[in-house]
Amino acid sequence: MSVMTPDTSPAGLLARLRGAVTDAYLTYPERIQIDVTDPQGGAWSLISWWADYCPTDPDQLHGKTVVDVGLEGTGKVTVAFSDRSHFTITPAPDEADNATENWELFTPEGLVLHYGPWGRWHLKNATDPC
Image 1 (cartoon, rainbow, N blue to C red):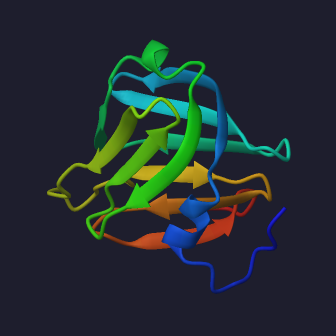
Image 2 (tube, one colour):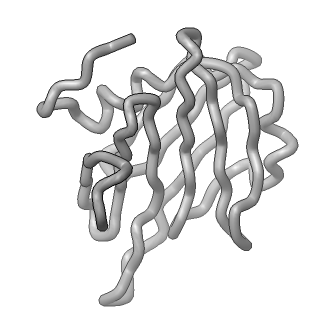
């Protein structure tokens, strides 16, 4: 297992997301959660919030294996699978003053990486208050 350091970049953290998709489901209308178990048995969860995602049917993600994760400067995440298919989360425009985060990633070490609104990143312990 990799050791987390305070200077971990969002791209560096996402680069560690590898393994079998153990579940994928809608968490709310127009939101999705993908659970991945890495080769060491660690549990990861990638969750969309204020974002578009494709494919939109979680059943299309079951049984896949994550082999790469790309991150664009816009916050768009592209998850590549071993069968050469992809899953993307594309942040929605932050038009309102009360815009919410676009997506978040929970790690096996108990950290959570939040992206958005307005292109902001935040890495913290998942048990810390908001």
